[in-house]
Image (cartoon, rainbow, N blue to C red; front, side, top):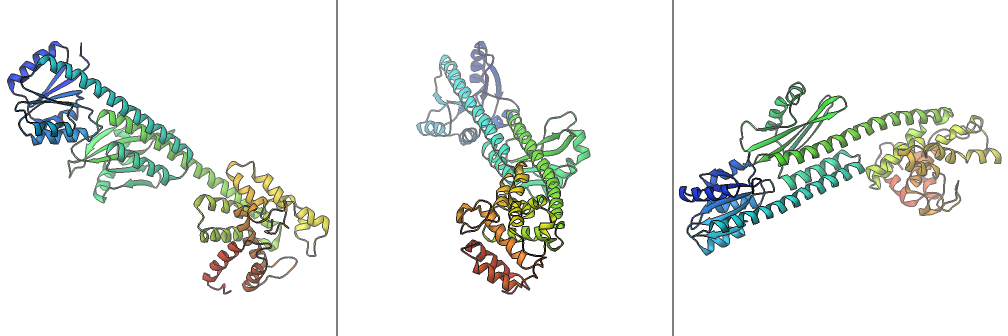
Length: 470
């Protein structure tokens, strides 16, 4: 029996509909009707149909339009068998090209129709399996991408691309309650204002108390449909995720399930990003406190770590470095001297030249800094910059005597920033130099101590700074 197969008889005359109904019900099919081809889409909005039998005239533009619509959408998954009252070769070709499963001509053998319905159902089933696999694959791919990045723009861009390609979503609106966060795409002001009035926090709590999804249409445009989904965290409802689609096709049950998974994945990824940002903020406050602790050991170098960070960030921007690199430079710049915590204040504040023993102890501070930062996961990469910021291009630096490109780029940038700030501020053992004098020293030591490319980038920055004539 075929009790699991839904068959639609569309646009057939009373006699043909009666004959089809009689034999198809005997075979166990579930039968549905529409008197007009135009009514098929309306029925499909709320009822899944596996196979539609549509009677066509010599040339039926409405039927051709329906076939093209069904063929161009993954939402319906309905196979159509055309029953030709007035057979025509051109119409037959056009129907098949537009996506019809078959084109049958009078006189119809009802037994043949039953066989073709079963064949159409099997193809429909295979298409749904492929579609389901594609959605599962897409969900898996999204989860992999979300787990690998902590950048809001990247996860939103991926989500947008996925739902636009797979579900013909025209716009997206995401709002996080109790936080100044809104993300949107391809929506005008009036729609946003309308949605905000419906899905404010207090109303959303009521709406989603017993509902997992809300379907609706924009009040001034019945062709703009939306699917609103709640986002939850450990504290309850924390946001709303709304998909928009323009056209006659509303969101069906299968789409709601898949889009709910995508929205939930995005919600979890966004929560992780916010947690990381909060954690990073706490780390940065700790880092700033540590850098001040280091600077406080030497009354002459207060603000030095902040200056090195700022110069290094400017150089990184001048050289076109990306955000990830700049984050590492920010951490390393602030903490490049963190290892001085392990060096005696008597050595750090000594006004005369250090002896060999004292200098050997001072040279350990990059290693101390590396050992402090290395175990901290998000500072691990920055710890290499700290370790090598006293290396020299010619290999005469410390602690490992690295040369040229063996020295990490971040360390070479910090090296220039560190030297410039040291030269242009008073120290216990000598007065500060002018900017011009410091730049001359950077030039003179290029290719021996400093990377010439980095010195050049830094000079370009200084030339644009008011009061930094060089």
